[in-house]
Amino acid sequence: MILGPGAVLLRGFALHDAESLLDAVARIARAAPFRFMQTPGGFRMSASMTNAGAAGWVSDRRGYRYDARDPDSGKPWPKLPAAFTTLAGAAATAARFEGFVPDACLINRYEPGARLSLHQDKNERDFSQPIVSLSLGLPAVFLFGGLTRTDTPRRVRLEHGDVAVWGGPSRLAFHGIAPLKDGEHPATGRCRINVTLRRAL
Ligand code: MD3
Ligand code: FE
Image 1 (cartoon, rainbow, N blue to C red):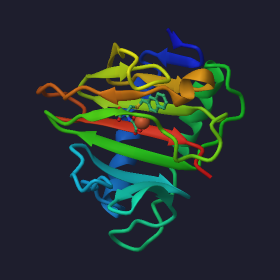
Image 2 (image 1 turned 90 degrees about the horizontal axis):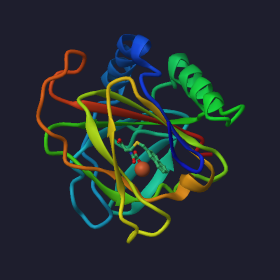
Image 3 (image 1 turned 30 degrees about the vertical axis):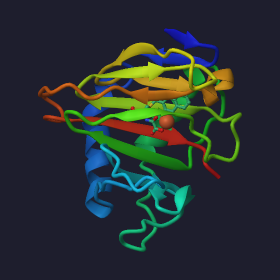
Image 4 (image 1 turned 180 degrees about the vertical axis):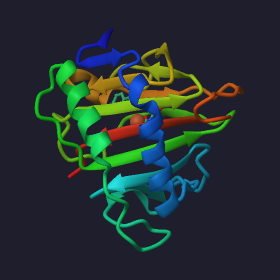
């Protein structure tokens, strides 16, 4: 399903691999636990986060950036699981972005009420590289805006096993997640997990 220029939603693309992908998330979270990061403005984000790969996305009072180490442990982020790299390459190819090899994986965990306000992803070096996202667990309403903050966002439901590819002109679109509705999912319990695979460096 085409969401916009360069933005493709692959419904159920990861459905059959969901269990092993969630195992990989759990393994990462044992080495680098989910934590609530601070925005540069001093607010606590409502989704908790962790990372894997050569570079991890971090936010604190000093700003947003990629860092090779987990600031909570001082250790490098866990290795990017092969299952994530493979999924990202296959999804990118399906969306006609050949040869995508991620080096960064941000994992967001939403509990009921958690949200992500409209933003652009601009901390990566090369905006010609797409971002691949994987949704697991409870469904969410994704807000897909335009290239300016004031463009009214479209609302797209993202469900367990959905994979989306965001490239080309959509790479710098404003986007967010509406407050997560309460519920219970057989695979995750009372939460939604989103995995984004990126080329940050
Ligand atoms: C569209 N995450 O981590 S994933 C993020 O569900 C983020 O946790 C959301 O936005 C989540 O930065 C949305 C889908 C997504 C990711 C990156 C994009 C859509 C995008 C970058 C450009 C345009
Ligand atoms: Fe984003």
